[in-house]
Length: 353
Image (tube, rainbow, N blue to C red; front, side, top):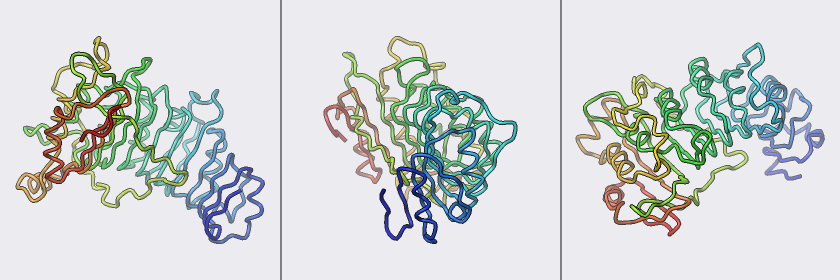
C-alpha cells in the first residue's frame, strides 16, 4: 500500500484497505485494483478515481456514488462484456471532465453514458471502434472534447476523419500506433493527412483550433523512399492520475465554428484502405498539412485566421517505430521550427528534426 502526501492521494492493492482511511477528509484521489464497497463520505469527496472492473455494474456504481468526480480511469476486466451494448437507461454524470478507458468496451460506454462536461478523452486498446456510437455519444452529451488520445485502436482513416468531424473544439490530438480495422496497417493515410490540411479557399476545416499533434506510426520504410520517420519512442503519458483534466480552459468551448463539419478532403484516395502501399507514410502530405496549419506569430495571416476562429498549430511530434528518418525530406519543417513551431521528428535512427 502506498499513500501519497497526507492521504490526499491513495493507491491501494485491495479495496478492503480503504476502511483504514475512513477519516481522511483530504482524500480526493483513489487508485485501486477493483471498486471498493461505496462509503458515502469518501466517495462524495473523490475527484479522481482509477480502478478495474465490470463496465456494466461497477462503472455505473462508481459514477452514481461519486458526484464530485472529475476524472476517471477505468479498465475493463470482463472480455465477454466488451461488445455488450448498454443498459436500458442512460447514466449521466455532469462533473466528469476526464475519462481514460482501457480494455475494449467503448461501444458499451458510448451508448450507455452521458458526460456533458467531458473535455479530455483517452481510448486505450480498442479493436472494434464504435463507428455509430461515438458520434451519438458526443451529440447526446453535448460535450466539447479539447484533448483526445487514441492508443492501440483499430479503425480506418475514414473512421478517424469521422471522429474528428464531431470535435471542432479539439486542441490536442495524440494518435499512438493505430491499426487499420482487421489489418496491421496504419490509418494515417494520405487521405487522412490531406483531410487535415487547411484549404485557404474555404472557411470550413477539420479541427480548426488544433494546437498540438502527436503521431506515433507503425508504418514501414520502403526502398522507393526511406524517408520520413520516427522512432515510436513516444512518451506514453499514462500516469495513474494524469487525467488531463487541465483541459485548457480556452478549450474552444465556444466551438461555434462549423469547422470539423467536413472532412476537408477533396483530395483523392477514397478511403485510403486498399492499395498495395497503404502502410507507407506520405511524408510530403504530412509536411503540407503542417505547413498549412502554421501561422507565424505576429503575421497578418495569424491575425486573419484568429479572427475566423482558427488557431495556428504550435507543436508537432512525429514518431516512427519501424522507419528511419531522412532529415533532408523534413527540412521544410526545420524552417517552421526556427520560426517558433515546436517540431520533433524521430525514427529508428533517432531524432532527426
